[in-house]
Amino acid sequence: MPRITEILKCVSDMTKQSSNLPEAYIKRAMEQVEWRTPKAIQYRQTEIKRKKFRFTTNRPWTQQFEKQNQPGLRRKKVFVEPILEWTFFKGDRVEILEGKDKGKQGLVNYIIQERNWVMVEGLNCHYRTIGKKKNYPGMMVKSEAPLLVTTQVGLIDPSDNKPTQAEWRYTEEGDKVRVSVRSGRLIPLPKLAEETQDYKTKSTYIEQEKDTPAEELTRITFEPQLKTFAMDIADKMGIKEDRIPRKTYWY
Image (cartoon, rainbow, N blue to C red):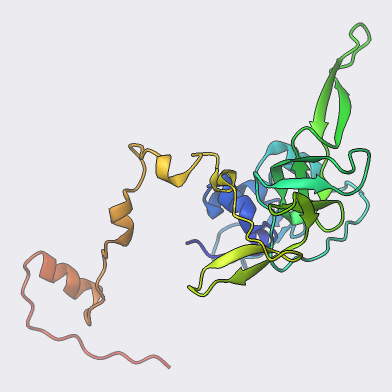
């Protein structure tokens, strides 16, 4: 796995898992470098780049996200309540607790964990007019608005179909499960939680030509030995060397 950098620390694990994209690609797509010294021996390698981002409904690697985080844009500061253990997943049935659709239930179809947001399919919608010109009235588009998981939505308890808070617990076998706080009823994870951009479920995914086979991921390709690089190459090429290199010391 690539090393986690400062840029990737602000991207939630759920976003990276649902995208199924390499962390190196996400880092490269998000990176906004204002100044970087040339790669030469006479320069001290330094760079000035953006470290804080304003997360929206657009994914971090899209052009819309880059436009919304352009330098010089002054927007109201956002405070996000930290959630230690996330309990909402795509496909969960939830009930809206605030707003014009209060009391209605629906399925979660989009999650922005960086802002504690979920979107419920067909509920809490707003309308936008796009493509409006002088001689053209434009087109009205309907889309779901985000809802805060801390105050505006609640998971549905399977025992009575009413909203409840959920927490993670462990079974006697050591399995981590999601449980309703009010009734203690197990709330299973939906099948849609496994969906990514590449497959609906892991079991139904068909390996492509450029995919690394599963057996190659577990195969050990390197065995450490007490040899120098030159000695290792000589052994593989059948070159016999009787001389022993002198010892070197590092202080």
